[in-house]
Image (cartoon, rainbow, N blue to C red; front, side, top):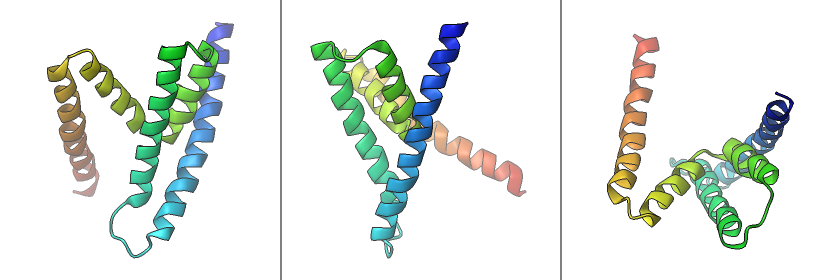
Length: 128
């Protein structure tokens, strides 16, 4: 039980850091593209998160770097608070790397299509 609480505190504190970084970077980028009607701030956060999870996962897998505690804090906590899109990207990449192309395509399709449907459903439920 004590280990689970420590792990939760590590993930939570990392998540706090990631959320603050997401807020700051997204706002900064969007302010720089102030006349744009496109969410460049969100795009920047999601793409940076994907690059970072790729770099860190590559170091973990190829060089056996970083302890499980560090990985929990950074990958789940900081990057999870920064953007869960990076996890989605890495999990899809892992399926493709393992030649599970149908599962990878299904993962993309389900996340995008079902996610949009659920946003519309939630919005519709409260605005009727």
